[in-house]
Image (cartoon, rainbow over all chains, first blue to last red; front, side, top):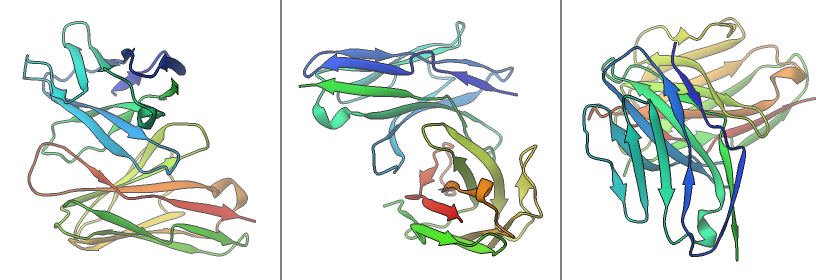
Length: 116
Length: 116
């Protein structure tokens, strides 16, 4: 079974600064997807960024980028120029590649606080 | 695009009654839908996977007779909590995966169930 570990229950960063959220995972599969989801107080899950394991290039979406280290099974999220609207719970998630038939395995989440 | 709705958004019921939660994909056909449960300040836990026209697959530890899932069409899945008890109180979130691949799941806004 796959596991996802987020070792930072809470992180705090000053507005406009950069913050990195950590995520490690364990799997025996060679092909899979990794995700970062944001969950604001509304509880709506919002996809931040996605990485396909077979792609060596790190995914980037505007101010959000990942550092994907496949051998180390590490998938960290970097948020640049932090904004007040970035404050939320962030979940790292693993998805298998069985034709998309698998549900996602989530980490326990990191509560991100943005200090004005 | 890729909008998933859930109804109701919150429900309060008496112990022993059954509650049905609907999950609809509004602008795409969902070949697979997933049901997650989230306890306060905790992560999402996959409960079951449903494919249109077939029986749901439940995760280990999830009582299939308590949590009935019906995926009657490509745009609708329902979760019925039968004979609900206070320990079933939780936040239930559905997600849907379209036929486009990529393992991306689109999440509904969730349903808060409170059993008195």
